Length: 251
Image: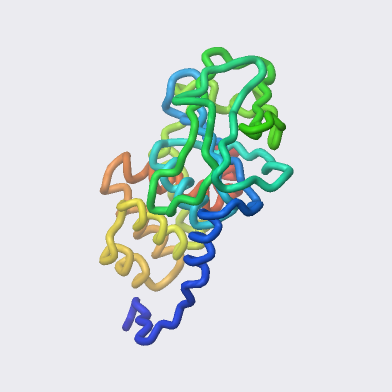
């Protein structure tokens, strides 16, 4: 069809599904990821820390959910050793900060459709540097550590000083019309977030040129209000952060 491809006789292997279930049931070494997000709308400094298997679908699901919560990813290195499903790992810090609901995280595979385990780290007063650690719950061995410095948060020290996402899109609308790329990926994420529906996606794709597609999308989202514009801004930061940084420099 014009905008849809239909697989009449799909032959996808279920091996990946079976392998994930198998790994969840037995203790095999698995490469992990640690994801840290800062909630931009929360008081003081509030972080969400996830300990997950290195699975792209799980990571993308977490990023989409955190994006909907107005959070920003803080890039940090991954653990330097493999972890084991079924084990519990303890999150700690130096100096001590509030970690809730409890500092222990189970390391397991959960479907990307489900809410993943995370701990909330609340920092009332940000020090010059805070060390975060993840330790094996059985022998207290450090399996991951990272430093959080004030520079990691300086751009967000005051929410009131942050430019409105809607203001950014309006101010740079002309530039975005001509420079915004990867429209297919942007439309996919916006549809996943419920900002646009499939009919509206087809209407954007039906435009003749890249500039017309971009303008149509920007006009469409602008009519939906500030919340929709915030979603588009977050998607754009994820898809093309260098474009956002470059336009920020024009402010």
